[in-house]
Length: 331
Image 1 (spheres, helix red, strand yellow):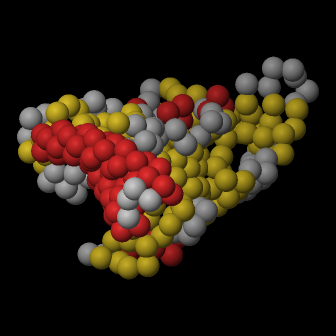
Image 2 (tube, rainbow, N blue to C red):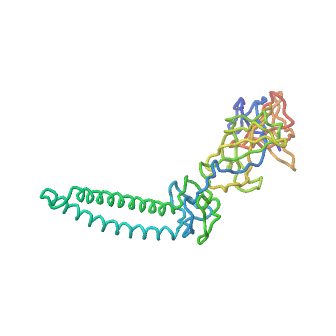
Image 3 (cartoon, rainbow, N blue to C red):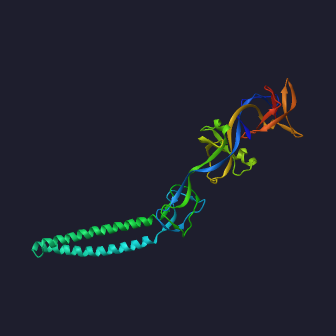
């Protein structure tokens, strides 16, 4: 279905002698034919939020449709083995700390006895070596404990980007593996994916303006002028599949749409010449549309065929009944 829209209008307005009426000198003007197609709302990026460790999903803070920010904790994965490892390392740290305390006491004793000749240099060196060995062993055990603590903190599943949660395939209580997807997040904004017949491929170009209708598939409501949202083509795919060409359009304020929702889109595909008059100039009697036209100094009422023009202006296209130079009388 093609919908015409006024593009350039050069109408000469001539006021008549009376204050109540005006004359419009008719000349063909450029109008653009629009193709009405269905587009599908898509997310620019769909990124998974993955578990960094294996274990049991303890809790989940989001549901389908939840909005998240980058870095938000969306779920917590717990592993009981990490807690047991932490207890074992704490015990090792305490044991090594006690051994280190005794070794330091022995070293201090050897250090005081060596100058007086009550101990040997070998015993002094042995005491010093024991202190060094236990000190390094304590540091290594603390490092192992830090690794386990880091693994425990990685049990928090973080949102990689800001966006909306599409799916949550894992429920609390389920066992998850490291790298398993806990939630899928639509991020990076939304756009409309279009698919047009191959014959309109030449009319598509980056920057081409488009209009998107309101939510819902009712044509009468979706393409109403007050419900149209403006946008433009940002990408045209170079491959044609099944006789159709795909393109992406950025539209203002698509954040409240569902990902995958279908909307009507008006795309300019051709230009032509046509007569355009204000809707108020058309009078309808017995189902027939009439225009008051001044020809050769006389005012006549002629039957015309009109078609609506989508857009903010209340104008219609006259398909038949007018010729170039006619003066249409408007109220």
